[in-house]
Image 1 (tube, helix red, strand yellow):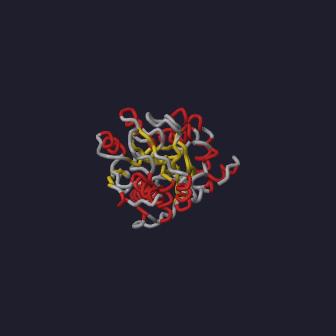
Image 2 (image 1 turned 180 degrees about the vertical axis):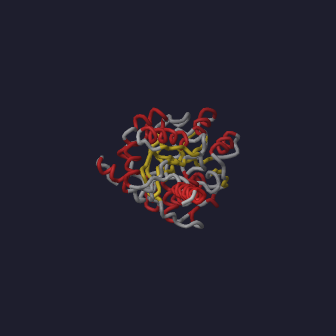
Image 3 (image 1 turned 90 degrees about the vertical axis):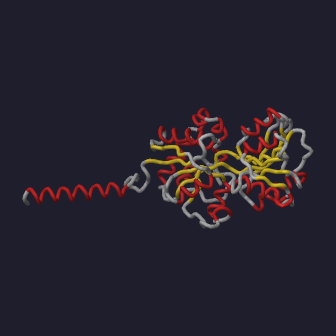
Length: 325
């Protein structure tokens, strides 16, 4: 082969090699990603802050190069996972249910089939907030009142709809407003709103702010209504908000919660997901020092509060630890 032909051959060979590298993307020979992207939420929220801690643990302990990605949170995260744009994501247990069944905000898109639960992390509490001096004492008293049910299309709006439903109340029975948590608090302060639904980890900054100025009360969701709710929507659990969590809330409040969870793609190998799960739950003490919510993540609660299928890699770890679903 003369030098000219040899040069052409080498150029073709190099081009072919570059194509192979490009096709391989960021995956290793086994098909797993070499770099993980963790979809969280807004930069001011708990998902993003806690996600930073989880990313650090996975990078340091699991030796998986993991980066935190700010997103629009639960609903967007399920779509990002379905498209393969991220490999692991935060979501709420109710949103995971809607995504896997193709209901509510996923009706148009249809069911997302490649989602697998990794673990429950901590409860996101549904708080029905009223001013401390409000005449509203029960959920039934909300009829006819000016009530914020969360931002339009949000998980909070669906929580409000479902909780009101089991109390025999429809949105049409209220003067409904669809406001963010911050705008809801501002409206209550200004006397323009009687109550607001807030689904978030407690204590919630917006509710704490309201308590510091006007004082707040959180309405109880009584046992009989929780039973009705959980029978129809099994992703709800019952929780208690301790007295004095907020100024003006002097006694324990019984309400409901959905779960903040981690979800992965079913395309990830059992070995990789086992490594992720083990690294996270073997280092919960470290997670608790990174963010306060990390202290609420408990191994014994990892499989509670949801009915969706757990990734085999995660189940392998939980089986070793004697944690059952």
